[in-house]
Figure: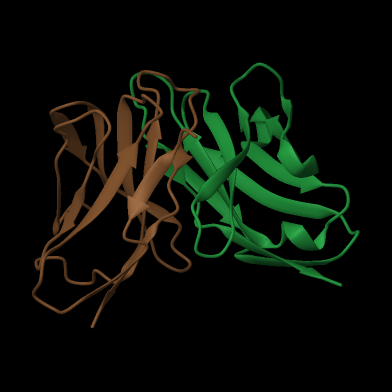
Length: 114
Length: 114
């Protein structure tokens, strides 16, 4: 079964600093990986997704993520944090074959300090 | 605009009462999902449906029921058998039969049991 681990339930950065949110997956098949963002009391919005076309994936709002098979990781980064980036971020994975269920990590709350 | 509509956004229920959360989509998606979100626990899958008149239990289906009589609609009933129903409920949809398809989410419904 697919599982997703997000290291750090809370990450705090200063405005303008690098954002790094960590995600590791466990799977015996090549996974399909996603990052979502959630603002308070709202639904989730897709930031980016990895579907094996390219290991470096660029998403919305300046975010990107790199798929590293050897490390089973899909960390999310942004070079310079903005106050509007403050939100909760979720990594999710789906296995191959006919299993279409998406498994989510527990989320990382990003705080951006002025 | 195409999207997913959940209602009500906030709902209060007395113990022992059943309550039904509405989810409607106009994206022409075949698959629909219900997730429960609790602080620090990420999203957990309750039920999902890949076609009309068919649905499967997710990881935490006990105390919940669903129906899928129309492609556009996937209501969730929280029954009195659900021991801890206070949570944020998210409905989502996606194109079926696709590992690379992302989920589109509604704005969520927050249920509080008094």
